Amino acid sequence: MDILILLPALLLKIFGLPIDRAIYWSGVAISPVLQVLAALTTARAARLLWPEYDAWRLAALMVLLNGAAMTYCLPGRPDHHSLGLLLAALCTGQAIRAALNTSDSTSAVKAGAWAGVGVWVSPESLIVIAPTLVAFGFLWLKSADQPRAWARQGRNFGLGMTAVILLAVAVEQPPALWLHAEYDKVSLLYLAIAVAATLDFWLAERMPWPAWKRFIAAGLLAGASALILAALFPHFYLGPLGNITTPEAKDFLDNIREMSPIIPINRATMNQFAGMVGNALIALALIPYCLWKWRGQPRWSATLLASLIYLATFAATLAHQRIAVFLAPYGALLGCGVFAVLCSRAQNMRPVTKMTVRVGAAFIAAFGAQLWFLVAKSDTASAALNASCNPKPVADWLNTEHPGLAAPDPIGAERHSPIIFSESINYPPELAYRTPYRFVAGPYHRAIDDITDMYRASISEDDLTAREVIGRRHADYLLICTTAVPKLIGESAANSLYHRLLRGDVPGWLRPLPMSAEANREFRLFAVQH
Image (cartoon, rainbow, N blue to C red):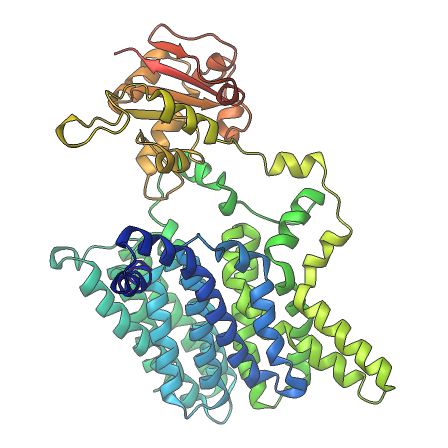
């Protein structure tokens, strides 16, 4: 992602724009550009499934209007998920071509290569890769006349992925760490997964057996591979979250809004669900229709592959709403077919009726579940679910009063950036961006120890424990939000440090610092007495 921002910035610099402004504007533009490319790539793949009535053209519009895709691809948000969206579409487009023509080995290798790039950018891409491998494996088991061809496509996919991940490990990791596994970064772990998949399909290709024997062999192969991977890399199946070992860190990460579930069980969660899943939901209705209507056709295999990826990403989205961005291209790829189906039904109707059906079908496909907001009303539950602390007034006060700083913007040897300890991981990144202060933790799964210390200090009922943790972190200040607190801390004992500070029972080793009225509306700041 950095390269995609820096290369256009260098071009802008050549044309006279200062490098800092060039990087800024390149960062502003990159995610919308990637979304447009993802939309076009998805439409190109959809054309293979839905050539009728040019329904595939709607797939591009669906990606552009999808709630999650728009959220992660906003101007000024250079998020790696926007690149992941494009890579998912590129991978599946090639995989569909490989499924439509089992002699097209090139497309299978390309699909695997794009999958490898996806892992390079973010191991979250496994949510797309795993069902793709399952699809090739199922088609190998199901096929009566060409099982070896399907195994070969799976092997080719694995080879493409292995080659790219091998390159990625060599580029991203120093030689001393080539044999070191990292869960949240391309490493030996993901190379091992790619190699295991390739070997499994290579062995499958050499099994000219009846279906029932292949079924048993598949179970043994998959089971053995999983056991070996689990022995070498515990929790490998959790992908980038596999290195989270403390319950405190896991619970805190679950309180990050984009990591939270969006199962629609009430109006508040339905609003979140409709906003993030949006028009991708309509694909659920098309999957059984397509698998029934296209049975015996080449499109059936390609639709099965896309459907398995869709169902896997849909289930993951319900658990963690950030995965919804990966759901967008598959919802569009399959969901645009509603236009073709309804147009086919209206083919023999009167011209006015036919046009009405076409417009209605396009409208339904483009907006899908987002139409919920035409009838939904905001309520207190929705407001509570989306409650958050606004740190901007605190940033304004810190930048005006700059406590602990000898000068507003010290440089060189004179620079000392005070450290602020907080009870939440959600607002520190914005404060770190807006001010010269440093913060202990943020919503990052690598900050396991930081998050654990934040949790233990906030719920501590013993001043010695809380002071030891905050002192070990060399914190100069303690900041708490009074309106939106992580659930675990909010439910802590009444005499925990957090609740004591809320009711004004301040221990002697902390000194209250009054801020502006606006900042004090939601926050309290304390100086640590060393």
